[in-house]
Amino acid sequence: MEWIEIIIEALVSIVAVAAAIWIIYFGLNRYFAAQTEKLNRDWMEKKEKDFLPIQTQAYERLILFLERIHPERLVFRVNKPGMSARLMQAEILKLIREEFDHNLAQQLYISNDAWNAVKVAREETFKILNHAAEKTDANASSFDFSTAIIETVDKLEKVPTEVAVNILKTEFRRRQVGIRK
Image (cartoon, rainbow, N blue to C red):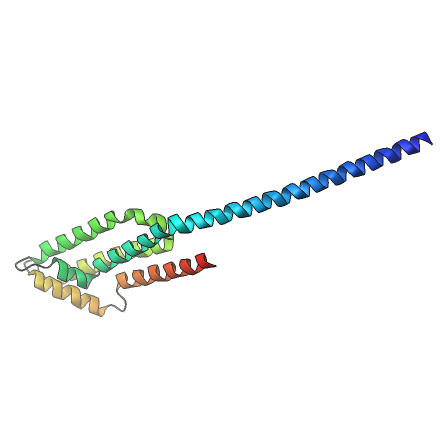
């Protein structure tokens, strides 16, 4: 009978230890889950406070960039009396490159799709300008080149910069809604 009592005592001890381990494990698991949730909440609050204004500024700057490189706006910004078509083309292309280079870091704050839309808009704007230059005589004036640009843009179903602006606006609004959830 001694063996049975020893076995029963051992089983009771094992069950008690297992129950204690299970209670400790369950308690620690709940504690760590609560801590993780608190850290995630704190991170989201910090992100809203610190990151969102920078991200908003990136969208603003890229939309401004796209508005500034809209072909028709470029015509009015760059065209000067007495300027040749080739000089105007060179000035516009230089301006677009400089503005783009100035905004390269903004890609950190937007999606890859939005950044690709900005790059496509820039490349398509180059194509519009080059197409207009091909339609313009080498000795033409900036007025002739400006007219060719406007005519080229008028034939487009959608202006590339406007398409990219809409993509940025849509993404920005979608992200704002997602943050508020």
